[in-house]
Image (cartoon, rainbow over all chains, first blue to last red; front, side, top):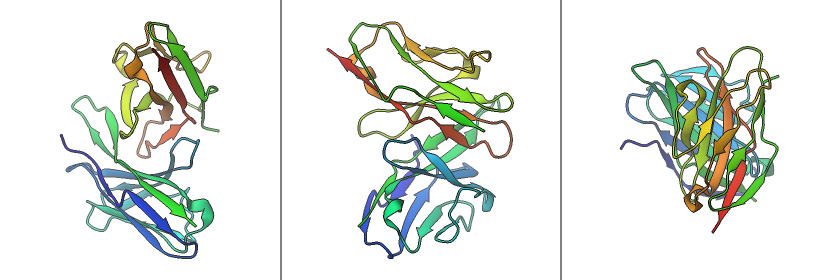
Length: 116
Length: 110
């Protein structure tokens, strides 16, 4: 069964350094999401892509975060410079639409970031 | 404001006992409601959605628009139900992002 892939699974970095996360959605899924999950909270959307276009980045801290999906397939999320408060789990999800028009988000395993 | 509230961080029950995980929401309009589950060392996955009106692994959830609630229920808990459960809502449209609650950890004791 196809799954959303993410790498790395874990990342430790020092504050002010740059970090990048990669996501490969399920083949054929046009919509891709990046969520951030702080410990003890639910995931919160950072950015949503439809193919290669950004649909919603209203919660993305654009002074330090950037996201791209150049060919409308895989995606990269970057943080530069990283801050202590960025320590969290970063989840990628992709969506399909079934024959009845229902959309289901499938999540990757996440990248756990620790900023020291 | 769009919000999902799960008042319990932890719910501990004995095997065979009934389970009810509470979820209340705030949304201007008619959202779609979901329950997602995360078992230990596994990824977040969809458990059920309100429009399907189905029972998955013995769990059901009824949308109560008057009380803006979407509680998850199971009559007889099993040890394998132990997991983190997240209630979430989505609007209809292009930006069908999920808005999650803070989650409830269900611990089923033997």
